[in-house]
Length: 474
Image (cartoon, rainbow, N blue to C red):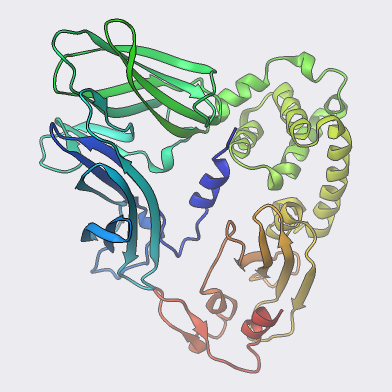
């Protein structure tokens, strides 16, 4: 089964200084023509900070290619509200297209500060019109009644597309919208809408299913709702089938999504004590269970990371033991006990070495990086620059989990304590990146900082300001 959690992680972990956006491509029809709809949300917290009197502005450019020829395009300036609290920028653009294969390119450019650009491409096929057909499925984050004239309002309902097709722990209802075209008066139709586990549509584990009677009309709009409060974390797809009076499927659509639901996960963990009877986790004393969970946190990815956090807050003793057992059984199979013991030996050493007086060593930034990516291939400690806080540079020749080479991490100690190093910047694409790291490292000499708050800030060259050269050459 193909998993999309990694892709999601890469998307939602984008560094704060670059544009973060969710873009969805959906196909709909009029009675006679078909069109492509581009829905996008630009997250306000990823845009450059504007001054007090201006609003967020993003230039949107959408190009539609057929082969090498541009057959349509739209350019639009999105302007946010001029308020103290910035809101996400949302827009919908539609393109009438003839049947065929297209390449759609979306570019979003921040008009403030660094003018960072977000770019995404998508291959889209428009099929020939059929007597009876369905639109794509639109997964929704928000709906409300509305009388406004807006591209985000359909049939009196305001709709916002769900970003990244991601249902987090606070969303317990799946709401979707689609349109059915060309239902004939002489027949009876109904649709089924069901959630099936897995990313692959061939998977047959049905989680939830409902049915809806359809009216015979040229265009029928359908708002479909499903309770997902009991569905465990994982990859899923929503399938909508339209049946005729003979119970034959006349059309079908599917849409994939991600569910993160730590409460349901923990409820499942609390069942089946027989799975862990006489296993290595029964030897862990109750008072040490939280220590074990916090120790493995650096190597646990979503959705299990959300489950782990919930376990630490509200989990039962059985659920905690099951989590540890299931994690190591999934990653190491029959050697789960050996792998767990070997890892905890390293985690205890990391705890001792990076303990800062208030947090476990594996809760610190350095401890996290060490456990997640291993021992660095090279490390440089600099604590003799009077203009800078003490800092360290770690370099990894290769990081297997991301496939990156020559990855660097920069830690600094703003409290001047050599036990309190914090991550200031990295080149790892799924970790924190700060292009203005020099300004923070040398903030004791503000007169040497170059640039304002909305730009990448550096410092003037100087004998006592070596970090940039060391970073580049290390």
